[in-house]
Amino acid sequence: MSVLSDNLKSCILFRNMKCEDLSNFLNMSNYTIEKYPKGNVVVIEGNKCEELGILLEGLLEAQALYPSGKLLTLARLKPMETFGEAILFSKMNEFPATIGAIKDSKIMFIKKNNLINCLTNCHKFMENFLELLSNKLLILNKKVKMLSLENISKKIGNFLMEEYNKQGSNTIKVSLSRKEMAEHMGIQRPSLSRELIKMKKEGIIEFDKKVIIIKDMEALSKF
Image 1 (cartoon, rainbow, N blue to C red):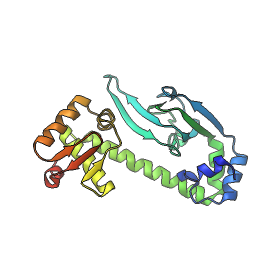
Image 2: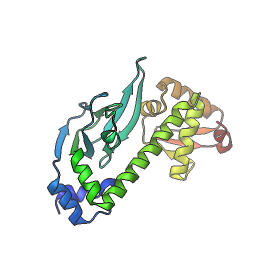
Image 3: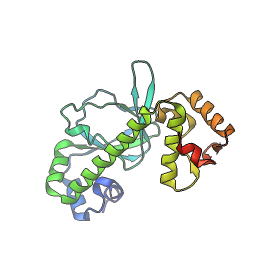
Image 4: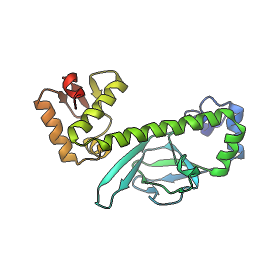
């Protein structure tokens, strides 16, 4: 098995697929692999989506720019994560955000007709594809919930409770920088810092650079 097919087994689309099915897919697919140095734009908001992208190496970031000038980070994509899967089959198949490389990246692009062929002929691939779409819908719902919260303390409280449930610990390891956290919540970085300091003074949390400790779970859950 090639290095590419071996790596793709880590992608949700090809998970638990037979080696023979994966090899056949690669042999029959009209795919391309493109490199994007750090800082380069992969797709621009409003562009037509004609291929599915799989990030093989690097790190990508999807951002939407509002008329007010406000920049909102919608998602960060790590290796073996995908983009374009839902838009590709939409009648309004335009990217809702700009995707850029924040590290040197390598991306595999697969044409729509190749995906349709695999969805038709491989039951496991279809199952994985539907799971991927469902996961993306849940993430979108969480993002909408976050943006609908009316104040900063509730947004921080929601973020910390989600991470608490995910990590199973009062000591939250935060992979995002303060700037990235603020963009994730759709707020300004200084506003985030002020609210974190306020919550620390009130004894609700303690924090360091990459760690936030929930000290008063009851108070946090009321946000």
